[in-house]
Every structure is written in structure tokens, then in C-alpha cells.
Length: 189
Image 1: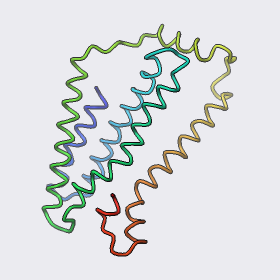
Image 2: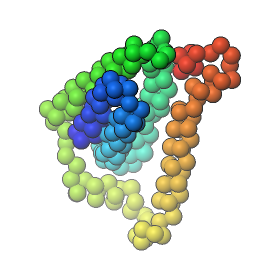
Image 3: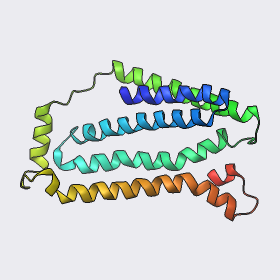
Image 4: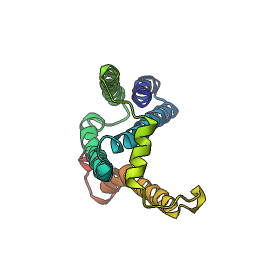
């Protein structure tokens, strides 16, 4: 609920940022949206691992993360229709951005309301302990600083996220600069 609310608030803050034509406002609202998405993922990933047999936890989380990849690909395509239509330094471009983010905020708040009234099973400490016993029973308990696989996994996640953000952030610029007569909308598609 916290992540969805934060995401919705960040989307709503895009409206005044566009109205005032404030780059700092856009950056702040984007940071709040990212914080909401980060909290959603931080809460959803452990939850999905305990929603079934422990031996299939990795399969469930990989399947759930596949939807992030679909969103990463489809986001710019859908954004090309909303954001890159009639681009330029005019007010109509900003109005398109305002309405898209208002629609996103309404959708996210409606989704939060659905989750609020839905009966979702609570994960207890006993559930978490059973999950640990079912997946890590053959490993010796080591101090945190000696769990090298954890540090390797954290480094791999850091590199993966950095590469994903870099590609997503610069791909449209790369396409428009390397292909002649390519607009931002076509580059996003």
C-alpha cells in the first residue's frame, strides 16, 4: 500500500511540475515515483517467494520479474504515443504529459483501493522460517560478512540495473542520432 501510494503521489506531482515547467519538479516527482516502485518491488519479491512450495520460489520470482521486462519494452512504445506526439517547446506537449500522469495516478490509486479491500494472506515469521528451512537447510550458518554469494549477487544486481537504466535512458537518443530523419517517437517505437 505504501509503494502504490508513493507512486500515485509522484504521478500527481507531475501535474504541477508540468504546469510550472519545472525541471527540478519533474526530477523530484520521478524520484518519488521510483521510490514507490522500489518499495513495491522490495515488498512483492519476498511475498511471492512464500506464496507456494519453497522449491518453486525461484520459478515464481523469475516469472513475476518477466513482467518488469515486458514493461521496460512496452513503456517507451506507449510513451511514444503520449509524450512524443507533437513535441516541441509548446504548452500542448506538457499538457499531454500532465494528462498521462494523471491517468497513471488514478489507475494506481484505484489499484491501491482494490488491494486495500482484498483479503491478502499475511506472511508470518513462522512462514518465513519454514521457507528458510525448505530452501537453505543444507547450508551452514555463516556471519553476514562471510556470505560471499550474497555480495556477488548484490554486485550482479547492481551491474544489471545500471545496464538496464543506461540502455533505457539513452536508447532513444542513440537511435535519433545514428539514423537520419528519425524522430523521438519513431526511436521509442
